[in-house]
Length: 103
Image 1 (tube, rainbow, N blue to C red):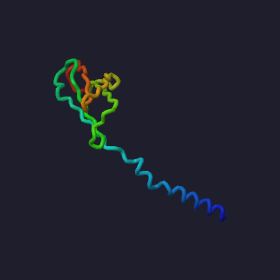
Image 2: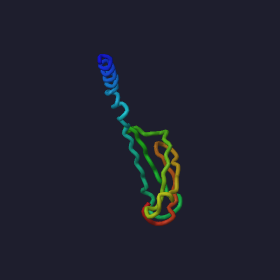
Image 3: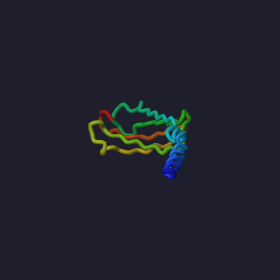
Image 4: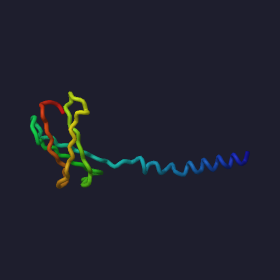
């Protein structure tokens, strides 16, 4: 009986050691992504898209950014993918809008 009690106390003690560490793994950095599509007003090729990414209010300079664009009435599988390139704190690319509508 005492062996079981000692084993149980050891397990409880070891299990309680890591309770305070969970906050370190559960806190995520505050990432903000701002997308500017202000110049996309009609269907045309090479429409500019600008994206600004910050982490805890500091600009992210080394992200790999890709966007997918598709018409809202179409299936997501028809999306076109575009890689954004970084230049002076802003990620940018040109997208092709072939038809009028909501994307």
